[in-house]
Each structure stands twice: as C-alpha cells, then as structure tokens.
Amino acid sequence: MSWLKTLALASVATAALMGAASAEVVYNRANSGEPETLDTHKTSTVQEAHILRDMLEGLVTYNAKGEAIPGQAEKWDISADGKTYTFKLRDGIKWSNGDPVKASDFVFSYRRIMNPETGAKYANILYPILNAEKANKGEGKVEDIGVKAIDDKTLEIKLEAATPYFIELLTHQTSLPVHPGSVEKFGKDFVKPGNLVSNGAYKLAESVPNSHIKLVKNENYYGAKDVKIDTVMYYPTPDFAAMVRRYEAGQLDTTDDIPADQTKALKEKFKDQVKLGPYLGTWYLVINSSKAPFNDVRVRQALSMGVDREFISEQIWGQTMQPGYSFMPPGLGNYGEPAYADFKDASPIDREEKAKALLKAAGFGPGKPLKVEIRYNTTDNNRNTVVAVAEQWKQIGVETSFINTDGKTHFAYLRDGGDFDVARYGWIADYSDPNVFLFLLLSDNKGFNYGKYNNPEYDALLKQAATELDLKKRADLMKKAEAITMKDMPWIPVMYYGKSNLISPKIHGYVHNTRGVYPSRFLSKDQ
View 1: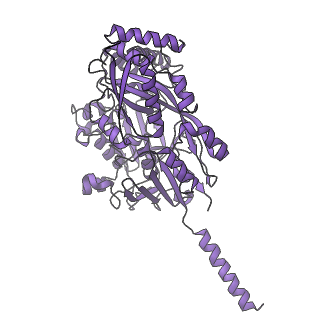
View 2: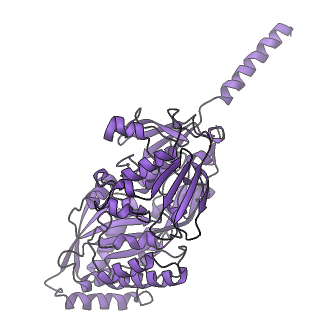
View 3: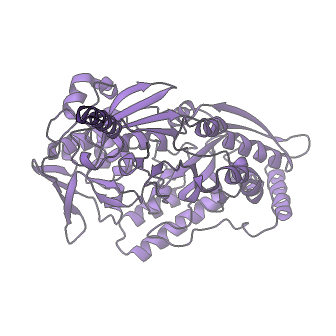
C-alpha cells in the first residue's frame, strides 16, 4: 500500500474519530407533569424544580447525592447568634448572556419574590429572612428585608431568628435567582426561550407546551468543562404506562416514575434498570374543612379511618409506597419519630366499625349516605389509588364521585382557591426539617393550606417553635402540633413516598436520594 493511500486512510479514520468524539450527547428525560411556569418565583411543583435547577443555580445547590453544597457562593460564614449569614460569591461567575453574576442580583431576586405584586405562592418558605413576611404581606417594604449586597461578591442575609435548616432551605427553587435585566426588559415574558437568561449548567432553547422543553449546555457556567451532557430534553409524561413504552423503545433514557401495579413485571423484564429508593414525602387526601359537612371533625376522622393503607400500598403501589399514618414521613432531620394516628395499630374491621359510628354521630347512615367528590391529577397511579379509596369508603356508607384533570390544571385550581370536597395532593420535603411539612397547615398560609384549616392552638405551637433555639424543645413543640393534625385530620396521610425509576444502562452518575433531586450536570451518557 502506498504511503499516500495509507495517509488518506489515516486521515479518514482520524476525521471519523473526531466526529464521534464531538457528537452531541442528548439526554431524553421523562418528567411526570407539564410545568405551569418557569418563573422561579411562581413555581411550586417538583416537575418544575427539576427543570429550573438545571438552568439556574442559587447560593447553595445540590450534588448528585441530594446533599447541599456550595453553588454560586463558594463559602459562607454564620454569626455566633445564628442570625446573620455572609456569602462570598465565586470569582468569574456569569449569566448565560455573559453578564457577571453579582450579589445585587440576589438582592433583586429576593426582593422580587417577596413583593406581593409578584404573586409568589411559595414566598412564605423564605419567611425566616428578616422582614420578609412583613414585606410579602404588604406590611413593610421589600427594601427592608434582610438581604444586602456588601459589594459585588459579598451578600449578607439576616434572619428573624436562628434557623437550623437555613442553608438547606436555600437549595429550594424559590431561592434560584432571576436575571434583573431580562425581568425588567421582558416582564412576564422573561421566561420564554431567547429571553430567559440563566446562570446554571444549562440554558433554555425550546419550550413547547405538551411536547418538550429543550435545554442546551451553558458555555458560561463556571463548571461547564465538567458537564458531560450537551442537551437535556424534558418530556411531560403523566401517562406512566406510555412512559414505560417510550423507555422500552429507546425514546427515553430515564423515567420519572413507573406504574406501581407493574413493578413486579418491570423488575422481571428490566432487572436492575428498575431503581427503587426512599423519598421524604407524603401522599395526601386534602379535606376542605371550611365547608359542611367536612368542617365536622367526626367526618374527617371517619374518612381517614376508612382508608385501608396496607391494601393500597401492597395492591396498588406494589410496596413502592409505604402506609402513612402520620402527617410527616419518618426520617426527617431535627425531629424523631412522627406523631402517628391513634388507630394505626387497630385492625381494619375495628377501624371500619369506628368510622361507621363516627359518621352515624355526624348524621349519616343508611338512607343518608355521605357524598364526597375527589379531585385528582391524572396519572395511572393516582387514578388507581382514588378508585381503591372510593371502594373502601363505600364499606362505611360513603358515595364517591371524581373529577380529574392534568397536573398543571389541578394544582393551579387548588392554589387559586377553587372549591372542592377532597383533593389529591403530595408533598416532598424541600429541606429535611419538620417545618417543611407543618407550615402547610398554618391558617395564614394562603398558598398551600388548600382546605382552609384553622386551629389557633396549632398556629401558636408553630409560632413558639419558630423562636425556640433548643432543638429538643423545638422538636417537642412540633410533635404536639403534628399530634393535633392527626386528631383533626385536615389532610389524610395515605402513604409515604418512595422513588421508582427506570434508568438506562447508558446513563451514569444517577444516585437515588431521599430528596429526589437528580441534576443533569452530574450525569453522563454512553453514545
């Protein structure tokens, strides 16, 4: 073979290798719901959080294990009284348009979410910040909240009181910053492709409702050289059976969930591609305790006793979820064992008889059944669960009907104060502390207390706990508050969440964690 021919072949081979090496790496990621918004200050769902955390980074962020690590801030100091945090931003960090990220950008962002005009339903998660609650309720100025730029690289945050979970709280999507210039220029349209400027590992390329969201690598991200995946395609897939079919066809690399009633069959088929793990969350039935007859505690208690959680866990969810008998799941930090319902260890027959007696005392029985309408967001698992609950309630004299909508519509309806009898809801811990669950039922929590529960004793206990520095005494106060919820039953805990996914062997770096966070920037994919 001539040297010219050898050189030519070598050149072709080299070009082929270079082409392979530079091929775009695309991660096709299922997301079990359509995002209602990509405005980090108006977000509230897990599905939105996955997308937003890929695009934006707060002072603190998550690693692949779901642990809080430095984000845009490389370090921070905490004052001796635990009320002042001083953050030092990384050198050279930029927004996706090349603008430098400044401490003042975070000041702008925290003021924006606390501005009542923004309409942030989740603003109260940041009430530990000094004067934040007053500003958000229109009782003070946003300029007076305890967030101050000392200089371009130094941010100071002052708190109302020492808050042991504050650093982890900053990992929540409400603490993700927005680009001031884009918000001021485009208003509510700043979230559209071409307008949205991000500071995380990815930037928004496309957003097509009911189809997909396309993120592409942000070359201005400080850790861009370590990001292995070039493009992340998020596909809304509330139909879990269809999700599995798309995974099997190679159209998805990971699923956001699996049909619980197919768990055994999926394990047999996909073997170790089925990943199961714990998850700090509770699946609820929220009762509208502001209207008759659901304002009668006997009715709420009866409905809770009438739910056979063991059956639902085993037969509907294939034990991927565990029976839930407390408002909060076990395993939360700064707490201990939850306050369980007093009927937890009673037999199903005893519970059923007690439930019938409670309904009879409340004026219901043969000839006058209690009629309940359940609203739920449509997924296979949710539908199977509420149908099972209806069958169980039938045994205690309850007639049940249903209204189902897609997730975006369902959660917007609840947040906007829509009327209902009972509504399906789930809550995943935003940080590992009991406050992340108990704050939901505060009487003044207009954003999440969907059933309009109001108990002054409960409110007083949480107010006292908020200023208690002794963690043991704080936990005791919160346990008393949780015990009240298990007596009043404003929300019926049905199951503790578990996390179930299908993960392609091509995907590496996926680590199950109780927080349910899986940042795309820590993953890689075989070509």
